[in-house]
Image (cartoon, rainbow, N blue to C red):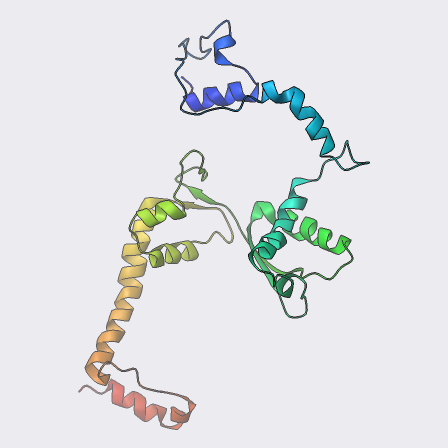
Length: 245
């Protein structure tokens, strides 16, 4: 039987009310949906339609009543407006192409919008803007044989990652090490645990531990200075280290 979420999605997409249907049997297996008192309070827009339509018509700009603005036009400009909302000095960033280089980090599905749409919008104003300088894109990071979906509770996100108790440096290490630069990468917990225990703790952690013990034993916990001024005596310095004490 389809999940309640799937059933709700079907009815919502077609603007149907379950209780108004003559036949409630599910076509897949003949089961009957169960009506329940909802937890949400809904805004009944159908009852506001007569009052809402005049307001909606007024919202259009004269001469463009039948036109719409492409969503990604407005979305990309949001980068600028968000900065302006944060600080009055926003023009030091967004109107300063000589001193500011704009780096953007995106998923592969957003490349066209931030390269062509955003840059084209800036150029079209015939004004001075800080435009894209470097674009770093990645493939998809998937989750356990599927897509991340916050609405469906599938995946691990910033707030839930914090609640796991796993140190933030471990998250940073794993996500950077497995950054999907050339192909889609799947996040799964077994891989995450293995990377922490083997790559991070055993390999890197073991190296750091050896260095710390070496400094403790031979240099009283102090990293000795070694600059270019020491280079003429490098062989002698290296020999002193290699010689057992």
